Length: 237
Length: 234
Image (cartoon, rainbow over all chains, first blue to last red; front, top):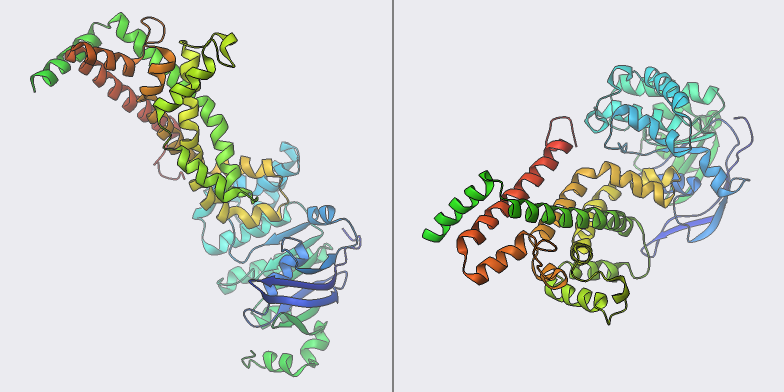
């Protein structure tokens, strides 16, 4: 998984109803670690993630992962802001991505047991997934994303609306994932979480990258006045 | 009132004596409508789902046309199928006119738009829910359709039952293409029309009650078999 998957944005612009919601953005992401995207609501954080993942239609520019898009997408996984549960059991939700890529039943069962144990849902495998609690759904969505062993993992506010314990469980899972060499790109509104997890930061404002840099440097001394204000807890518009 | 009472009596007697004609007619009704249902579902369920997930140029027009076709007059469908299958028609050599096969063809044409339209409505909502996930997982169109059909099976059951209801109670088209021939193409609805025309209201009503009972039994059986409305199911 340590093969280089490095994303480069070339003048990427996303417009909706004539209004640019992202870009133009030109940026090369670091090839490893955990990138955390922060910024006020409507800054284009989700759009940026979706653009990198290749599911957002660009009006201009392109995203380059250094390998063909199809292959790149096969090695990526995305966890959405509100977890999407298939109307099936927990077990079937975990098996679903594996069955799409033709993993054998025996191996799928093995991986399901492993991941269900890891997220603490081992006893709930036969429960209908849409009836899980918010935290359980989020963990299931995360496990379902990780079960294919992706090289790149996108997370859109994975801990929004979760309490401290669920947040801690998810964060420790993310640290494990990062250690195993998976590239993590996530958005968050929680600056504490950003400090705990990030190796590098991106600050978005009005659809553009306002500031960026390695996490330590960024938190110690943000270059732009807006980023400084944002980190201080001021309302930036 | 008298007629209805004697109709009930007639139905009762037909049932407990297991009248040979009645059983034959009932089985043929079931055979024709269930075959039409299976064929129409095989076409309409993937079609309706496909319409829900695909964006193409004439999508709105296609959906509007489909909804309009739901109201297709059976008599006209019967007439067209008749012309196509008649000796001088393009498919005349097949010799299908006045056979149960012709009746099945007519009913498939009548109920496919109905099933496809209801399927489309139901699948649109499910697709809105699953859209992001299925796109993100890089699924093929066929995988998307399979997933939606599987997870939306309750709604699809309703669509199919609506189609069955229309097929089993339909008379105009099968009368024309089937011809209501005794021992060959007579079904419950055409028999009722015939007996009413002859003035034998008791028998007609008896057959009518059997028809209603049949529709209820089939619906109920399918619901029990597929366990809708049970706790823990969707």
